[in-house]
Length: 328
Image 1 (cartoon, rainbow, N blue to C red):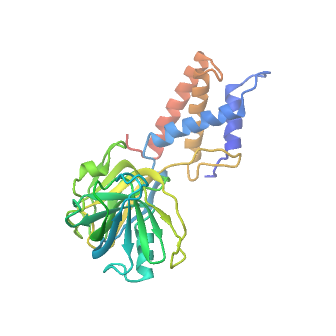
Image 2: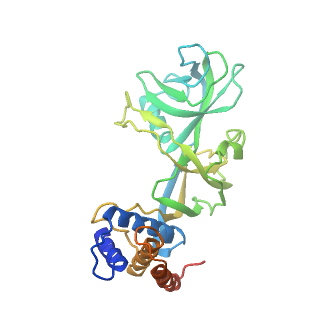
Image 3: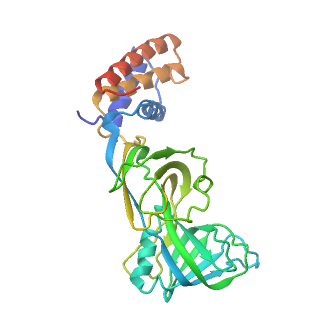
């Protein structure tokens, strides 16, 4: 099996769309669009064994809890407690005694993970707030929250910081299974529009080293990191948005989840681009499916030849599914 380049696929599809000598030309950009649309339909429509990977890893840090040292401060100029609220976590607090511990927060609770903080005390409700950014300062960490506290600024508050969900890599199309050191884990798939908070209210209320469930889905945005004074050469990272993975209940100690998944291929753009590890017979199937789409559209509108290409692609699809033992 040799990875077939985009330029070869373009030539093959163009030749099939224009079989006889003709002065008509088809834009290369249109052919690239046909090939990528066809590849998306074929590769994402089935769980091909050659697209299965077993190297997925998701790290979930143990929560950090302090009995003091959290200054919940309104960050807006208007005095209203709205977006821009910040929390300063002092190094002198119980949980953050050294710069190294601050950097642990900067690594373990930032992108691709999404951090949350819970404050306790008479002024706090015990509700968790999503952290959009963690900034290293000289004597503290400054956390920016995504929503308002609805309370007046308070100081010296006990707090807990945890991260039980994170953004899956863009190379992951579909998680197939998951396990940790103890057992295979139950997977629950949710709609992309779902918010994890609605699935498990008060998700910070308990911790355990016995994982009960992994939630897959939902669109989340990770916590960014501003490495102003990072102790261990941490770099500044921006937030990323994508499909999420969440562990439940929150782990009492650091936990790694290993998962298998179907890979998400990147659309082809350059002449030398390929679909890595995709066998030749499936590449030819993608080409014939692209030809069918071309005859069905204004690119090379020809209903009769579209039917012929449809039969060709249908036959090739059935052969490929059988050859690669794909469950349908």
